[in-house]
Length: 469
Image 1 (cartoon, rainbow, N blue to C red):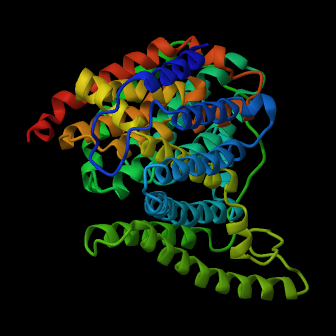
Image 2 (image 1 turned 30 degrees about the vertical axis):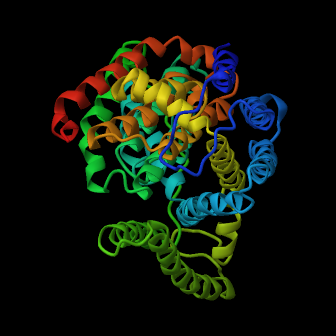
């Protein structure tokens, strides 16, 4: 498989000399026993992450252990050259970056969980299933909604929602379910690429200040092209058959629409904090979580009154358990949040050994910015876009705005090339187990690659002004 080849290539970096990085305090430990051990440990941990589905071992566990041991090796290495405080100072920088990401995602995940509990997503799924659309219409509609919803929610949640619709409509039609799932994955990843809220990688780029909030929309058309081209190719494999219509009807619970408004207000708050006050977006998101906490108090009281009556039902027929905000926080994707901790500290630790300086020189100085950034997208499909993008941000190559937009685009949509290349693809492989597989996705990789190449070309042409110094 391709991944062992990539890991082997990473090992070869240990034999290369380290070039000077932006931080003169970082020493060249790439050829030392501790440096090689740290690299081998990260590769081994990530191999376990890749095999999560087979081993049933949560992805956060190996990277958390690897992160701790790698930083022990960093501390010992710098103590040996008379810099006992270097590791402490360096790790605080990584912890600050993680804290911002953690708080931002915790607030966003809590809102998504609240919307799910209020039946927002279930109501949307029920509406689509009951409309009597043809399979081809469902194919286009689920793809379009995935593209539109993922910039506001995230590509994982969006893919699961639209995937559930496709599977409910397709039923035993495996051919349709496979093509619809691939279309949803591509659309969700493409939609998330032009919004700071659509993907972890875009969020990291925004929080680092490499691209401003409104500049992300410059890659809207390239992102749209990335989805449209493979969607057109795949649509010819979808019939115009009309599936059976379900009688089930799901309505939203009390307060659902107001929570949607609060979520949008929270996004506005986070953007305003970053753009106008120069404060971390995470602080704005936590203020937005405060909005929800006060509204949850109202919901708790209102539903308490409904449950205290003779008939504890509202006009939509829901039997209420009181809304509890902290249950929504508890249901956050803690495995994912802890996985980010492990990845950020692992990559940061490898940077202290000099590996990122080596990689930056090989990719950005040796291959050129455009080629390197296109390669980042391909690597995102093979490894994962989160450690790849964090590594690029840590390397911090001197690039134009156009190149930062390009790497944001490629890291966001490159994962669509393989089913294992994005959280959306991995999630749908789990929910459509045995139907949507690595092999079934691979059959359409050629069409996705056409969209990937076309989106890059569109960006280079349409956003040429961003490439000038």
